[in-house]
Image 1 (tube, rainbow, N blue to C red):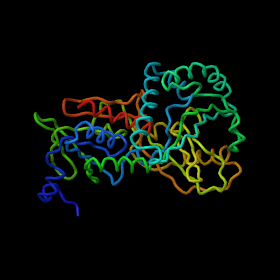
Image 2: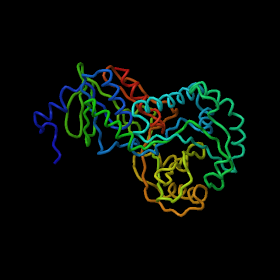
Image 3: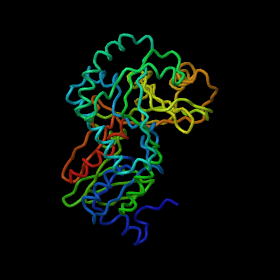
Image 4: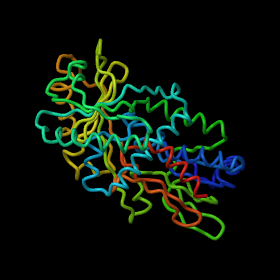
Amino acid sequence: MNLNIDALSFWERKNYFEGIDFLIVGSGIVGLSTAIALKNKYPDAKVLIVEQGYLPSGASTKNAGFACFGSPTEILDDLSHIPAITVWDTVAKRWNGLKQLLELTGENEIDYQQHGSWDLMMPEQNNLITETTGELLMLNKELQRITEIENVFSLDRSCIDNFGFKGIETSFFNKLEGQIDTGKLINRLNQIANKKGILQLFGIEIEGFQTHYYNVGIQSSKGYFKSNNLIICTNGFAKNFFPEFDVHPARAQVLVTTHIPDLKIQGTFHLDKGYYYFRNIDNRILIGGGRNLDFKGENTYEFGTTELISNRLKQLLKENILPSDDFSIEYEWSGIMGIGNTKAPIVQKIDDKIAVGVRLGGMGVAIGNSVGRELAELF
């Protein structure tokens, strides 16, 4: 049964669709964080989150669970075409966002583990190795300014033998990065939201909206209703509402292996300026990325995996990451991120009743909660 709002009971309409102070579109990290921050600011406000799917539709429950803020080669690549002040402001936002997230959720509740991360370098990347080594002093100086911790990055070749890698020349170690359980993160945010009386409805797609003098009129797949304020937290799907925004969908494909006995690998790892990434999870290896193999094809709203990228991820697993282990692939999926010409998120008011927080640049775990707090401060 799929009732329209007009066919609901007095109780249903009164409790869910009437007297809404803040309507939030999107039940992912940003949407939940925004709702929680608004209830902290306005305890008596009626806050409703609506989501078109039965789970968050973008990347919040589909990401790889990296608690990261930028590998050395990725940051240097950003500095080559993005103003330095923007790059470092974005890195700072990620670092501070991770701290805020852990303070909100608790480390144990989301299975946070800080094993560090490694930026792995192939033999054919000797020029990049030399360049990155030469910039470590500068990178560490900027990271110390942001984190107040010395020598965040260091050259480390020992991980090759320690983890049994093959075809890796060396690596750059980041001692501050960690990993989380993505499912536990959303569950924890939901627990906090529920305790604060935040309402959530799933299976409702917002089709359009219009600002009126006193409120915002909302046209949805279940009918028309109103809210005093509207906040869009749909990240990669933002163009559905704001075609003029510099934010585009970017599909991220992910594979997870079968259980591997006595798995040595522990931590998070980056390859090729962050376009590939992998980590341990439950004695398995999760690997994702490969969007650089087909930028045009991966600029899509369609979920799914492709043979081109899937085969490359499997090749990396077999030849470089797990050369001595027997395994097969047990899980394959994709998520939709939001990217643009810069990695700085869009957090702004459209008018006095509507705000938007999108374009997380593949760093939703790091900055999703801080974006939500920023959105709440706009009201």
